[in-house]
Length: 134
Image 1: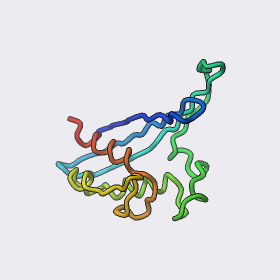
Image 2: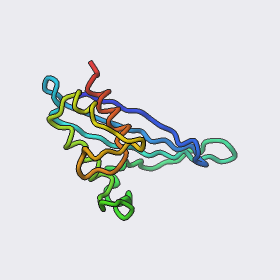
Image 3: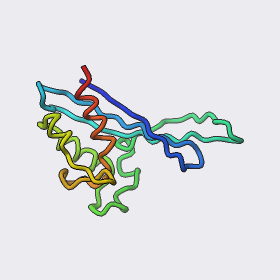
Image 4: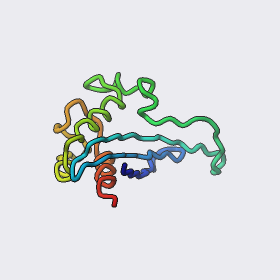
């Protein structure tokens, strides 16, 4: 099992907001045999310019399932976790060269993966990082 993750920050948000993107893969030689991708959105509340402590459970987008609320805004009427699963399913059986060769537009989207209209930029990057870990 190989893992990779990155965090990105939304600089325009009023409170610091991050998304931790994660990918895990299993490999057989140069082919992906299993893949999971997920994202943890995190908002760090502030008061008077100081971070405030927040207790409670953080849930990834996949753990939120339908509560994430993307389905109603999606042109294909699929929730985020369903689209992430479509990408993970697409990756199984592919080589690193095939995954690296997925053509992404400037918005990070592609027509190469059926059932997936979300940006794949971070997912693909972390998948490649996980594959290439020694």
